[in-house]
Structure formats: structure tokens, C-alpha cells
Length: 261
Image 1 (tube, rainbow, N blue to C red):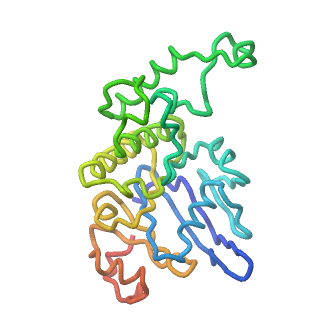
Image 2: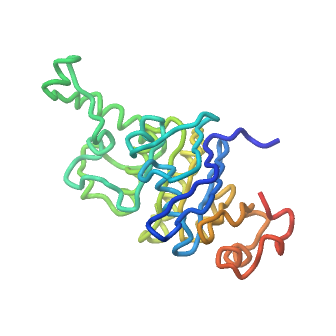
């Protein structure tokens, strides 16, 4: 029996002048899964993710969260609906501590309304919660008070992922989370993504790294020429066949029936 749908897009269309980036795209994310999104350059995967994360508004189509239509005019709207995005550039503040980065833009204040008005930060509570959340995800960083600039690339990525997981209520979207990382650090981030999924948050993973996609994804959404070409099961299809569909060298009809998910 299929798990319930958490996040859906139906018939998304997005045009930029004469260019149609999304040409009636459908998308489904189910409860408790990691859904990878792959596609060649110009396939429309970035436009799809921007629409799902609120960074762009589609011209046509609908987006549903837990079966209810949602309308995102900005990433803030998506955040308010419990959707967090980890961007490729991480958006961390290197000179600030790990704890401060976890609460960046959502700082806790002391003394109620007066504290919020005067911006009196509750650093003790933020530090305690940062330790709790990083321990919960088993992120092995020595101290939450060290600055992010002292961390390796993989550790910085883990901070960004942990921040998203801490505040997401429904979905975490990750854009190329292992790009520019070495093998060891890439594997560290993949393991963290699994833990996020195992905590009950479904994950959308955008990646060019096919070995990583096949290692971690439960299903793969293949985007081609502004449309969804197929959804495949990485356990039932080869990497070469997946790339063939992505590039147009093979059609869905040429795949084994059990490869489709």
C-alpha cells in the first residue's frame, strides 16, 4: 500500500518570456521518503524546486500540502507552511557560532514582548537547544560555540541541514547538498539526510551526483524538457537506463515495468 502524499504539484507551468521552463509538471512526495530530482541542464528541475520552495510563482498549476492547496509568494510563505530549503551556497554566517547559525533569522529573545522589542537574545536557551538538536541528529561537532568558519565543508553543510530539520514541519528540500565535498564528507552528509528522513521528515534531494542519488533515494523523479519524464525505483533500474531516460536516449516504454515507481 502506497504511503500518503505529503506534497504535490499538478500541472505546473512557468514561462520566462518565450522560454517555457515548466510545461505542465506533476510532482508527488510521499510520507517518509527521500525523493531525488534529476535532470539535464535546461530540464526545468531548478524551476520546479523554486516553485515548490516559494522562490518563484508558477504561471499555472497548483501545489498541495497534505491535500490542501497552498499559494507561496515567497520562501517565507513556504517556511510558514513548514517547508525548509537548504541551498547550495548554504547561507551560513561564517563568523557566527554554530548555535547562532541554527537560529539565524529566528533568534529567541528573553523577557517576552519587551525582549523582542529590545532584541535581548536568549543565548542560553538557543545554545541548549542547538546542542539538543545536533545530538538528536548525531552530528559530531565538538562545541556549539565555535564559529562556523572553523568547520570543514562537510560540517558546514551538516549545520545547514540540521537547521532546516530543526524548523521544518512538513518537508526538507536540499539543493546539491554534497556538491564540492570529498568522499568522506559527502558520505557524512548523506547519513545525516537519512537521519532527517528517519525522524519523519520527507526529503526532496536535487543532485547531479548519480551514485549518491542511487545510494540514498527511495524514488527518483526524472525531469526532461520541462516535464516529468518518469518516476523510477533505484532498486529496480540501472544507473545507465536512468541517465538514458534523462537524456532522451530511451523512452519510458523501453524500461522494465517494475522499474517505474
